[in-house]
Image 1 (cartoon, rainbow, N blue to C red):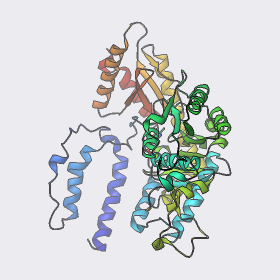
Image 2: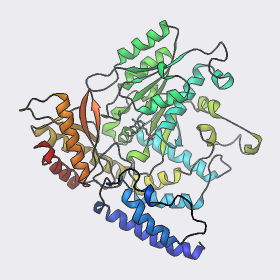
Image 3: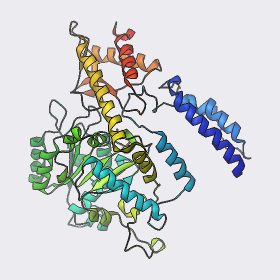
Image 4: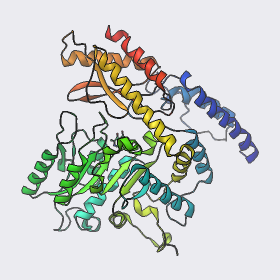
Length: 475
Ligand code: PLP
């Protein structure tokens, strides 16, 4: 493709993108694709000769698009949002065009320095402590893994990096603590970091699904009594299932008194801290050693963009720093080389889209959208509570409502409730008009209404509620 062809095709693509966003409600949120259906339409061998872009695009529309789950649909209420926005898309086009690989300051000085500035903006927007420094990672999973590895190294005097696990007498069994409601990325990270699944303590939660600090202390003491070294606590500010907020201050105080690394996973809910009235969710954050939240979930910045902050980057850098001859530059002593702030060497220029989003909406614009999502969730929760046939299965939290059909006038056992609520969810999702996902809370099959798409408005919540309360499955 030459540049003239690129120019005209790109213009057409931009028109297509704008039309797509304008008409997204015409697409089913969840496709009806059967397993293997897309693969069956694609050739097993790549083309020998180059193909025309028109043919490629036509296949994109015919084969790929019908198999897409529309995360940008305003009636996407499943899992958690992965919202995007026009300013973010524009920046992503520029990022792809520039194609910079931002592993070191020298490999794109502007990328490193912009990242430092936008992370400082974010720190201030969330009210994080002054001594936190931020870096962008791809996902919260990677951020948490980085925290766990850093905690491991700090606790062992950096000896695992040096000698490997259990290779020298200084290495002991290390334990990680998180709640039984914590995200699976913590277990995964702890396994990858070498702690071992059997050294992960899942601390019980209270009736509102928050970690119980006294149980945490019990587990820490129990490990110490058994010769196991407590290493790291991961607190959730917004669990995945119900967006429960762990009591950070109490957990933080315990971490300080037992000298444990405290990592805070606020993957989705962290965004709410841009609202002064929701800043309480981070009460006690000054005790944390590291903190993650994802602008790629609920801050209108397209995937991927995970904001990782740490109190004392020297531990992070000491853990991850590599300095082979071919990467050394004259600027090294004066600048940040962000390859040393995480796992991969290669880094995308993610700061640009964050910069575009924050500048384009402004703090007030972002606050307005996040506040509205929370208001819509509160409204939805009120409807569900007032309708005698439904109940909330967890306290409504920020932009999430956990609920299920459970009419007070009929007594049903858990198995029957699960069957009927699963049928309700399937009926709703099959309609293509909305997409909800489920979880289990205290053994109860629960539907999750997660509100956070960029264009979700009152009318979408209202029509979702109308579909839910009139679904065949509940009559
Ligand atoms: N932590 C929490 C609380 C989450 O809800 C999620 C995703 O749902 C994650 C971590 C993982 O996020 P990522 O996909 O960025 O790794």
